[in-house]
Length: 161
Image (cartoon, rainbow, N blue to C red; front, side, top):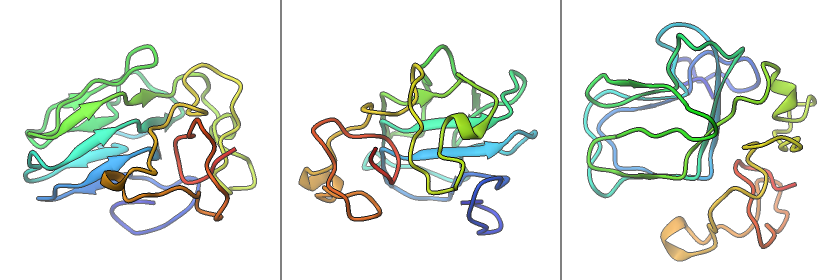
């Protein structure tokens, strides 16, 4: 979803924009079109110690080494490395986030029909890379967005393969 306009779907311009929030942000697939200052994740304000950013997959299409994937609350920008994406976000816990760099084509990451099932088949593609969200602290989520049961190894994103 485009954090600025609210537009949903493939080809949106901006990702998730935080403003003075303490989210638990786990197992999300966030990607944007590449342009300066259009981050998959950006913060304007404060993020407290109750916030958590874990097991998310961030991507921008097409890939461009000049553009960052995350802008923290202090205005510092972060780019991905091979597979990993390390960043700080206020006092929040941040761990195990993934930078997707296998392809410049969004349809190599998610199904071309726009249903957001991960395609798989490449390194750091989000398949079986997610955290177990069935635990209470993650909302006890055990089904995907289409009400299919998640398996023993969770995929990142709303849809389980």
